[in-house]
Image 1 (tube, one colour):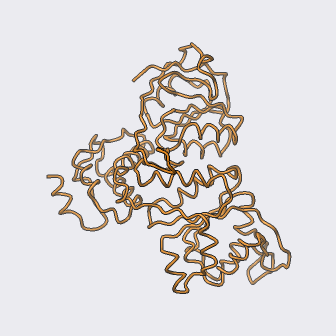
Image 2 (tube, one colour; image 1 turned 90 degrees about the vertical axis):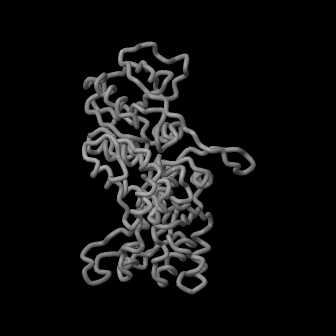
Image 3 (cartoon, helix red, strand yellow; image 1 turned 120 degrees about the vertical axis):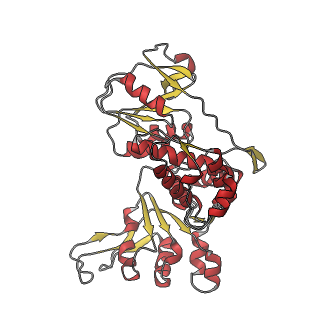
Amino acid sequence: MSTVPLMPLVTHSGGALIASPDRALREKVVHRLNGRCGPVQQVLGGADALAKLESGGWQVLFLDRCLPDLDVDELVATIQRRFPGTQVVMLDSEGARSAGEKDEEKPESTALPVESRAMPRPGPESPLMGKAVVANPLPGMIGTSVAMQSVYRMVRLVAARSTTVLVAGPTGTGKELVARALHTLSPRSAKPLVVVNCAAIPEALMESELFGYTRGAFTGAVQSQIGRIPAAHGGTLFLDEVSELPLGMQAKLLRFLEQKEIQRLGTSEVTRVDVRVLAASNVDLTSRAARGEFRQDLFYRLSAFPIALPTLAERRPDIVPLAEHFLACMSAAMEVPTPRLGDDVIRILEAHPWRGNVRELQHVVERASILVENGDTITAEHVYFSYPHDAERHSLAS
């Protein structure tokens, strides 16, 4: 732990936001501010900070240089572009300063001394495109395993373009997180991200939901409604579970992708819409297309740039960091100390097959955090799985 001199701030009435995974650091900043910046809220990482900033009204952000989910330099650039009125104050082992300030300009004041732990970002090197590169996790994502390095790299390569991306992977692997990262890192980040779960909309309502309708277009249409596609104008449209689109709707979606034009139900007026389309599927669309269950031409359109996500079993080095992240988030929400994972639990988690992937891990950790009550260590007796695995668990724990 090292003492960090925090720069003196102009008094703000709009409120301060503190983003750090270190609870002691956050609490010490709150104590030292002593109400000088108005209301104060705390978040654990960069993705949560961005979400809070979207609500507006924040005048200053205290940002830990070691975040669990985002690359700090990219985050600062995004904040300066999208929220120019927010002052960013960096917290690291070398001192605290406004983002963009040169080292020689760093203030000498120790008016608000706080502590900041050094949190290294270890990660294996993976040869990508002829270079040894270690990519930082995407916004909202955890893990530096080799299996995820290619994903991070590809997302950052394609994020700045308007290329259609198909994110494929089993349920619970983080497909929506990848889509949100693509939007956040894109030039469209200041515009809407509209998420459509294709499996959750009845076939009879799909066209009106996507394209919109005018008053009187059908029985019950008492007023006009903008569709999901025009609502994403200038931004990003994310079609989750795109494999569930009915064949008739697939043809209309294909026409939109080719023409970038829509026609609302009940009118002959054609409207041009500028959106970047992302899609996700947890099934093999190639096989579905071969069986005639999914249009091949639409598949080729959607998979202009495919990204395949690994299962959690294929990224085992990320299991413990993910579990610890979930524990920290749950403890922060309940305002209780974060329990640690016992050695026996770490062995159990690393050996489990994780058929439900990251989502299953999150649920297992949530149950354990409840069962541990006020204890400081999660042990094997607190770990339960959604399908029989007791024999393996207890044999590993013994």
